[in-house]
Image 1 (cartoon, one colour):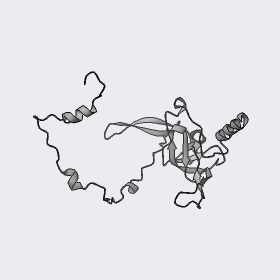
Image 2 (cartoon, rainbow, N blue to C red):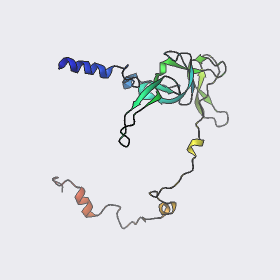
Image 3 (cartoon, rainbow, N blue to C red):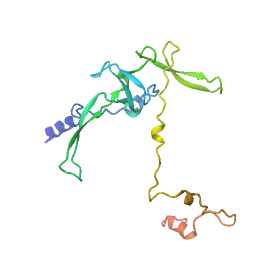
Image 4 (cartoon, helix red, strand yellow):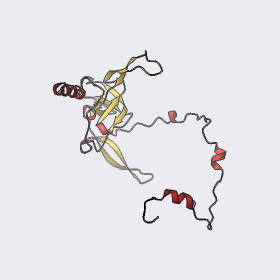
Length: 198
């Protein structure tokens, strides 16, 4: 019994059996200064996808890892769902890649480079902004702009939404003669029934 339990535990922590899982990263070991953000084009420097480029789909800061679109693909088995118990499928998804295995790409030479942050003062407003530069050069690696178009979708009110007219309606008028507290009966219910101050 003891030996079978030990074998079961070893199987559960075997990363080859669970390719989509990433080892836990303690807070003290997590990357403090991230130079890669979502939407960046990166070069993979190590692993089975070495030498390929891709776009960062998601940044997993708690795991020091990235999801890169169409890179490091693994097969995930989907269990039969309650609505269709006979249907089980397999899908291809991106597995995390450790941040140390990727590098940002120089926008001019298209080569993997190391970057650092530098404070740059805006000549118009006079405010300083932190920007990414290639180490040892004046080449800036701009951050990708957010795709605002996908957030500007037309909103359709559902039956459970509050209408704009009802939301603007004034339902409370403060009065200096009435304290803004619940009634005495409600306060009495909230008090501890066993308190000596009751």
